[in-house]
Image (tube, rainbow over all chains, first blue to last red; front, side, top):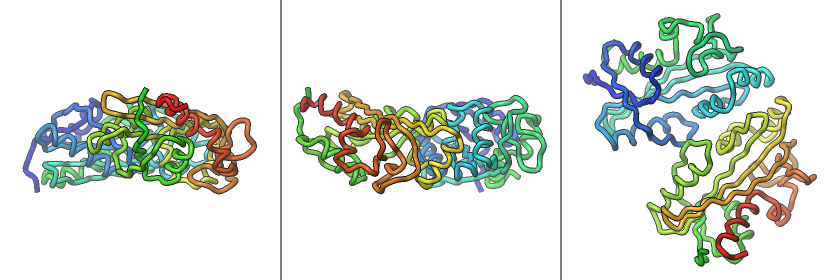
Length: 184
Length: 184
């Protein structure tokens, strides 16, 4: 078990950082905003590992970095880690309309967190949530207004941040990280 | 104008290499099969530039490397350089069925060739062809059976290699490279 209580979270996204800090609670997180090249790989572990190795070449760890994958059944599991390009190229309404036309809105979202103390000490923690893409409801960040997790009648965006943090893919992955760090 | 008549073409794909050699004719091409990381970027120039820089770090040039982008109107211009992941996740029939369901099969394919003598001497040459995604006809490699260029009644796969090499996105890009090299 690691004893370190300070972690660098590599992200340029303030909301992601705040969510992570809220969930991790005790652990002191520091935002580390460094622009790392992202490799083109469908396997999120390879994407995350390459980022951790690049970060370790710049600065001492430990680091965490994450990557979100979204799998649409209608697209045979794509776009996976390429979701960000869909969010840049489509409005949320258009994503919903596309999946409706394809006749299948089933969605699995997963967050992969990579933790690295050094190059030989890299660990992965994954949280997955299944649900549906719906017409946008609520306002928040990213694609939260169109994702409704299974067993809920609200989209991520309609939930309070506390509600979302109890059930989100980020929560599930961060819980595994916390357990690993011996803090649960 | 460059006078060099020997070029290293960075590719692991033998058919691509043969097509390029046939089109380039006079220029002596050598296949350089090195596994370079591909960055995750929608801008093909950034993808190609990163590969050229990585290759130059290993070996003396001049190098060419290419990247294909496919833009589907039904997907607001995606998948772009991420086409390879669609070809891994979908059968050709499924790609056609998906675009039919979305009501738009219009497609633009472009080949971007990057040429580098050294890090400060990088040039780009692009060839674009518009057309439609159709039900698979003919057998060849990649997605050739489902791409029918505008103004033709054959798919790429139904054309002889000579026919295809006269009109393809690869031909258009390689012609620009040849012109640059002073050989046209």
